[in-house]
Amino acid sequence: MTAQHAHDAPGLRAWLGLATVLGPVLLVSMDGSILFLAMPRISQALSPTADQALWTLDVYGFAVGSLLVAFGSIGDRYGRLKLLMTGATVFGLGSAGAAFAPTPELLIGCRALMGVAGATLLPSALAVLSELFPDPRRRARAIGIFAAAFAAGFAIGPIVGGTLLGQFWWGSVFLVNLPVILVFLVFAPVLLREVREGGGKRIDALSVVTSAGGLLLTIYGIKHLAADGMSAPAIAAMLLGSMVLAFFGLRQKCLAHPLIDFSLFRDRVFTLAIITGLLPLAAWSATAFLSGIYLQSVLDLRVLHAALLALPGAAVLTIACIVTPGVVERIGKRAVLVACHFSIGGGLLLLLPTTVTGGIGWYVASTALAGVGYGISFSVVADTAVGAVPAERAGSAGAIAETSNEIGNALGIALLGSLAALLFRLQGPDLAPTLDETLRLPSLVPAAALDAKTAFVTGLHAVVVVAALMHAALGAGALRWLPKPPFRGVPATAVPATLDAPDIARYIPNVPGVTGRDPRHFQ
Image (cartoon, rainbow, N blue to C red; front, side, top):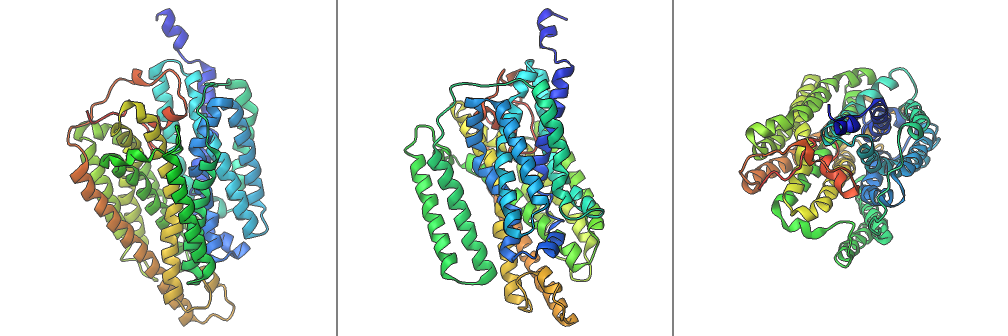
């Protein structure tokens, strides 16, 4: 072995450092889905309203998605290890606060704090790998492990949550974060070194505030309209949020370094890739949340039983993430993405035969078939987005692709969940705004309980039909717009020696799944 290879070979410190970094990364992804099976138990304990329950689920994803790019640039300028330590500490404090929150409002606030902290952890955690693994090939392998851990976190979140709730009270789904955070805070200063780029791009604070604020106001209005009907405050919130988002979009055109480069959306392939990054997570988060309620509140299954039923889908999703890069090399990205959308759409439609009296087999089959598409999406979307734009704009394209995944996770529960809430309000017995609240009424008669469960299943069916139709449309769009030349990979030496905030998104397709290759596939 040459002297150079000996110098580049990672030692025990590098692999221990990678293991240390993976802890917080796994938590950030897992906390995006860990509440899907826990919400019925949380609803029993805290009695949130319909819109408070939805905010509890999706405020985390909104916070992460809105701040990812900003915190990536902050880490470049002020130090990634410093940001990692700060973010991990805040994440732990938010988790402890959420575990013992006495009210829905405080729980929502703690979840938002966890989302802000999660946005600090993701870009900095991947960036420190460049210092741990100077050899490009080993760095590519480390990045692949990093992304596989992130994919696994999304997949196992509901299972971990359901398992914990089978033994402990609802706050345990947050306290499980604390040992991992403590281990990270003890070992990170020893195993990791500070990485700072120094000339990070200036962050436009107004863009960060208006993007997050506009989204939250708009979604707030939509949720209130779905849960409570037409009202002046809800309409005002929607209009104000839309105006704030319009101002945000106009401001990006005037900035030298915009938070989001909207000119990239002129490319149809790029636009299709970003929608593909957003929609599968929207469909997955909404159906996972609603299915958790269906299994526990409609079919009366124990939470541990519901968690075990989610295992096949999680296994298929994880395997699909791992094997997709090899499949792409054989049949091309165009065919793989078409298969992605139609498998998700077909899997979602398998939920239609579910009824108030049974449907466990249909649920398992649905998660398994849709899991193939979710795994494909997680693995290749950012590569497709980056490959659609010139090399000098790859950083911006990758950052948008990564952010679309987190925003999709939150929007699915916010928008599709609101559709289910609206149908429950219109078709249910009109005794309470949610199924769980209705079933807890002391004087509820069996006929009213049946009506409430039927209305909820109707809402679930409407959500899967809407999501399936959108995936069918995207599958047709992929057939028409994606280029036909097959994938051509390049050696792992294409991975740069250092990773700054824009580069990060090139090597984390969306969030879960990574290939470690230069993503310009269509040449």
